[in-house]
Image (cartoon, rainbow, N blue to C red; front, side, top):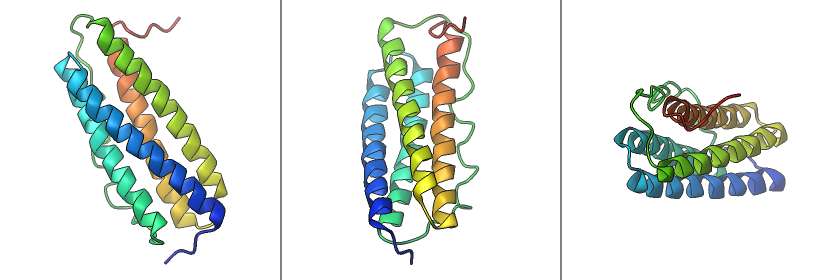
Length: 152
């Protein structure tokens, strides 16, 4: 059982709030999205965010999560985008909001990782951060394939 410092506990509480917000946004946006492919990306990401929340809750209760469990699960879901036409502005705005959210959440994990003493806790946070980056990549790939994100 891990003995968390006050700072570690505060950081985990912040991450818990971030995960709860991501779950809420992905779930709501999956309902709002027009493109079935985007709905699936959002649904897959919401499921992984729920796993992240469970991991954070384990850590807050003093348990060190098993970082080998679910390490490879769902890594490629939602990352392949079809090349069909451009969707409405609504889907683009949903994607832009979630991409911005993922950038923020990933950065917050980066800070937390550096503040944790326990290497297993750091590894668990690093794993979550990697998945947050993959969520952003899936959204980016979708947007680029639909002409919503133009790299200049």
